[in-house]
Length: 241
Image (tube, rainbow, N blue to C red; front, top):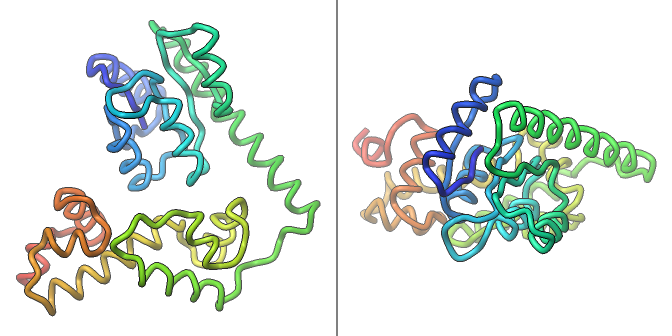
């Protein structure tokens, strides 16, 4: 995924990354759209400009992404001053690229970032095994998570919230949850929200916008996109079936 507020640069990044064989699942210019697309697409790597439009910059955005997702990050910026590098380094990015970039420089940064990310994840898994952290989630813990999600459809549900409901640490929750259910926590939440939306579409007179809000989507456009991605049709068409 590419997060860059200069459209020409964003198109260049998308084009070059595609040439290298990567699938660019989304591009974004602002932090809110970036967070939404990370949740929607769960990319393996984000190429992220430090200076972007909106209330928070790329460093703060990267920190928010890292709080909930295991994802490799490459910072892209024209500002290589000491303060910027220090702030960016604190997020522990997997790569760093200064604009103007060359195709070879971009390729090297992305490949290095992915290699660093895989190595770090492998080392983390080995430490967990050494520490005896191999236990699976119980069915009761999964049910606690399911109950929590069902009660908080209209709220922003974080991985930390779900981990707390299961009674385990955030660090191991995502991995254990996916091992047990075959889904990432975010995919699970999306499916539960869409299932509830289907029920409301069939059995209530609520508007589509109202239903979207009630199941946790900030606006009708985001709700329609999520609904269509999972079901293949729009909420309006589903209601007419």
